[in-house]
Amino acid sequence: MGRMKQDRLAEEERRRRATILGELRREQVDVFCWCNRCAHNAVVPVEMLVAQLGPDFPVPDVGAHLRCSGCGSKDIAARPAWPSLGQVTRHHAVRKDAPDAPDAGETDGARMPAITAGD
Ligand SMILES: [Zn+2]
Image 1 (cartoon, rainbow, N blue to C red):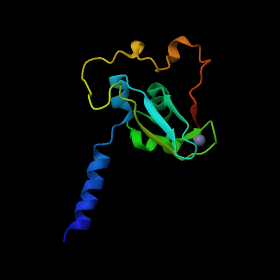
Image 2: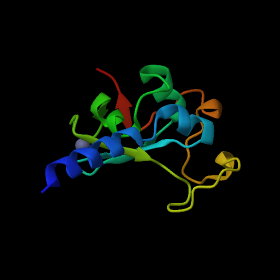
Image 3: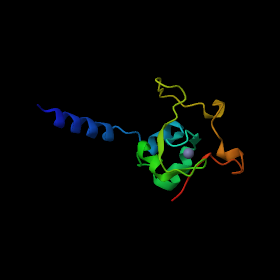
Image 4: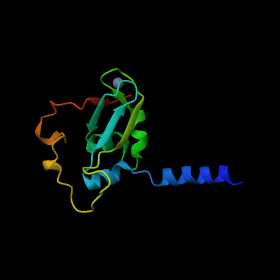
């Protein structure tokens, strides 16, 4: 009894708590994207996604707006690329020291993310 209701509440809770792009931008965290078809993956700069989708856009839904540059699939999973999983700190992320973070400001746009946004 009540199982369906519980599931629905859990679903609503998950949606309500989904991280939005604006939060990631505030934390200087980019979005990690994964192609479900070919396993291609990339970290997409959060500024780019905010510019295209808006700051209130939920991160898990970002994948629906991306296309894999490897196989062309639009079956993309997305999640916040937290610098250290399981330990989300409130102080400023040290973005410049992150080894894999593409810095759009210093590459003259020459380096494209492996997964590109577009419709
Ligand atoms: Zn792919």
